[in-house]
Image 1: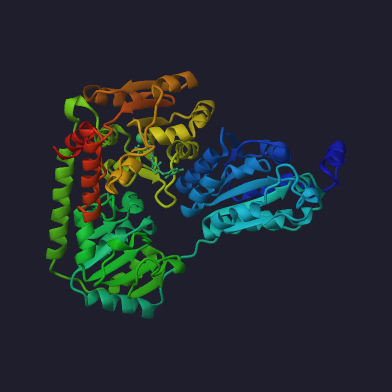
Image 2: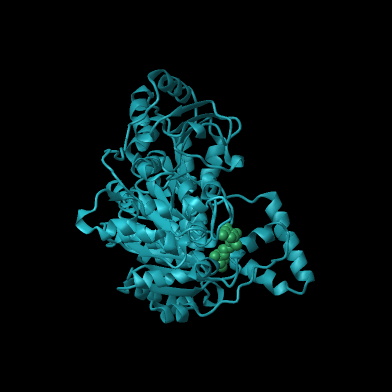
Length: 583
Ligand SMILES: Cc1ncc(C[n+]2csc(CCOP(=O)(O)OP(=O)(O)O)c2C)c(N)n1
Ligand SMILES: [Mg+2]
């Protein structure tokens, strides 16, 4: 039976509509919101959603919906849905789906499809979603018959939750319109096992650590929830704690042994400690840049995903386990040390770095506003439990360096997929998940423009998100990369509108700030707005993101850039750059 006949029979109708089965399953798997744009092949699912407890959030571009869903899935730790019409509708999610899958966010995409009878004949809007989404999902399959609808939806949800990633469920329109007998009780099982290495492996790790002189702990995003155990280990081994950017939220606060990040966004204490140690204990960290790993130290790696062990750099011993459970079991096997001089040296070095950074971050020459200064002012005035998003580009770099963590705040940036335009739509998902919390988006002028239309979603949904646009009139981060390679800036200029005016036209509160003397008051005013508000800030266009050390290649690149710029009659640009960064 199909939907039309079934619905005409009213209350006497036998069986269940597949669209209802799918939505019911999503709901029982914990889905609270479904982001998307409707379209003919999705209509029956939309109807079922409307009759369910799941709230539909209409976006203006499906990519924004996927960004929102993955942010909600991360902050609320629950399955979140997106749904699209066939062809372009469900294709548009792709970049946000990559972001979700890389961030291990449990998201389900209901990709509606043309009817089965037409599949394989290049019908209008036909797209083979299985091919498209294979590389960015943990589950990707079609419901082939109405009878398998519940079972396949259940396994899609369960896989997204168990493997932590995206499930893509392809649903031909004739399937969602089918009616079936549905009396087999398939349900989603969510397993949360506690995993730790076996005793022999723990003994081996303890031997390596007990017999090494200077140990450094290096924490990644797998350290969430393990603050206490990590500090206890650091205390026993007298080890300093360095961390990845993604672990900042979990390890920077209340941590007297913190020495910050290594990597390009890191600082010299974190960077040198990793290179100078005798043993490195990596905890839930899958840091990708190989040049930041020590070559001579013994490396012990603990990760919940066995495929992560030793995939970046050769390691001495790799084990599978939750960081918390593993350290709890390891702790009694570690020998307490007395000498904390190695750790103290790096903790001091980190404090010195923080002090000099703090002193450097100030209003610019001629009262201009460096992006770093704007970030520091935002950090100072934002709520203690604010949720931040930051666009790929300089806003993400400044967020990780200058937003003060405190154990309650969280920062969401695109660190693994590295995509622009992640900030504003991710803020939508955070605010939907946490209506009572302050959500602050640090957007680039390039980033905000890319998915500009979804500012209207913020207005339509009445979300009190606070957006700061770091307007440097350019694709700044790329320009820095070009200069470091010795190039003149190429195709990076942006001719921007008055973003505050645009925001006001769309229904948000909007203000522009250009002078550092007005910044503090403007930030306070902006954050105090009851509704959605956009602060458009003209930031210094020449500020560089400095690595924790001076590499030879970028130094030569900068010198080359400067020479070329001067030869092209652009000595003024070089002078601006020097003034903004070195004087
Ligand atoms: C979708 C996408 N396109 C291009 C890039 C390359 N890219 C990385 S950062 C960046 C510049 C971002 O500019 P903006 O948002 O203005 O931030 P800024 O660095 O200027 O502060 C670009 C083009 C990318 N990461 N993602
Ligand atoms: Mg920019």
